Length: 210
Ligand SMILES: C[S@@+](CC[C@H](N)C(=O)[O-])C[C@H]1O[C@@H](n2cnc3c(N)ncnc32)[C@H](O)[C@@H]1O
Image (cartoon, rainbow, N blue to C red; front, side, top):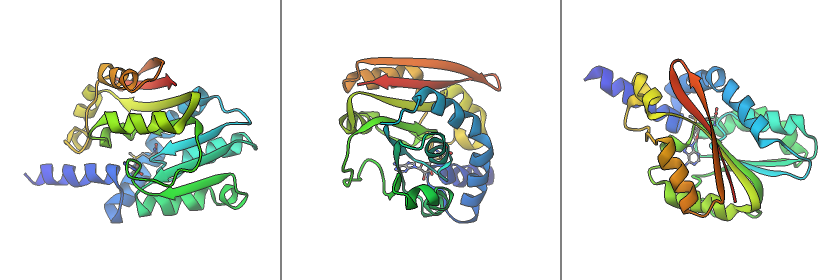
């Protein structure tokens, strides 16, 4: 019982980090997500005229890497955790100051202040916290330019079930088949995915084109 409660509390910190446990989750993500961020940045293949949006940017490491790798592209990012927003704004302050990066405070599904359309949108380890993929994917589709790309990194249900805190029901466990079908259903023209084994379980990089 105590273990279950602890794992639930821990799982909630990955959905919306806050307080001391949130700091612990933030440190875990900093070390754990580096490789995923690097591969997603490769897949995004950043160009000078790109306008990107990251959903659930956490501490802003992907935004920092993208803005640092290309001096012309523009990047918006959104997160709803005050703790992570503070870290993200600190990590990318110089790009915010030069006007190339904006960090929005809000829940993506409810946020109504987007004022542009994007060439590329991405979300790393965030899909688990969307209880219904259809409205979220529809919103992403609408926010993309024609021909735009949406890139996701996610772990398989088997990998999520294998770790005590990700096994908790706070994490929705979507199969790659469900995710592909949901993307096609909202109108994406093509969906590709790459499977990468991690600690004996599948993880996926999914790329959908409008
Ligand atoms: C597991 S962390 C991943 C952080 C980052 N993408 C990374 O790879 O390090 C999930 C992040 O998404 C944010 N998040 C989750 N659901 C969100 C939503 N609906 N709207 C905005 N942010 C969200 C959380 O606050 C958290 O910072």
